[in-house]
Image 1 (cartoon, rainbow, N blue to C red):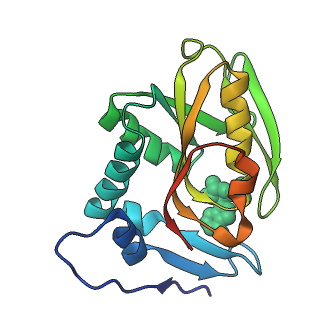
Image 2 (tube, helix red, strand yellow):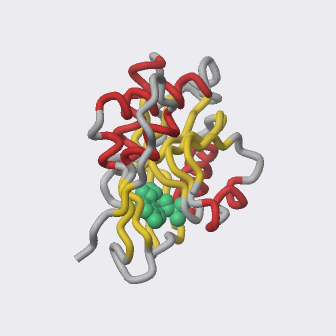
Length: 187
Ligand code: AMP
C-alpha cells in the first residue's frame, strides 16, 4: 500500500502560496507504477485557504497579461476555472484525445509514464488572444509543450505557463523554449 509523506511547515501569521503547497502536498512513492513519486495536489485543493492562496498567486503573477486561461485535463481544469473567474478571463479546456466535437487540433506527446494525445477546439477566441496555460505539475514538460503548440496553432499568443509544482530534476522547462514559466514550488 502507498502511504503519503507529508512535510511540516510551522504555523506562521501569513503563509505564502509556497508554504501552503508544502504544508498540504502529499507524495506517494511507486504510484501509479514503480519508480514514480506521485505528487498529489488534491490535499492542497481540498484546503480552502491553500486553494485561494495558489489561485491568487497565479493570478497576480500574470495580472493584466492574459485574456484567457487554458486548463489541461483534468487537474488543470480546477485551476483554470478559478483563475478565469478571479481574473475575469475566458477559460479554455484542453482535453485528452477523442473527447471534443467539431474541428479540433491534436498534439501527440510523451509522458513521464506513457504517451498521450491532447486536443483543443478551434475558433473559440479572437485571433491573437493572449492565453495563459495552467496545470498542477510540470514534470517532463511534454504535456505543457503540447498544449503550447495547440495554443499557437489555434492562432493565439502564449502569455506564459503557471504551475503549482515543478519537478526540477526532470527539467521540463527545457521543453518550453522561451515561455514565461512560473511555478509556486519547485522540488
Ligand atoms: P509531463 O508531461 O511529464 O510534464 O507531465 C505532466 C502531467 O502529468 C501533469 O498533468 C501531471 O498532473 C502529471 N504528472 C506527471 N508526473 C507526475 C508526478 N510525479 N506526480 C503527479 N502528477 C504527475
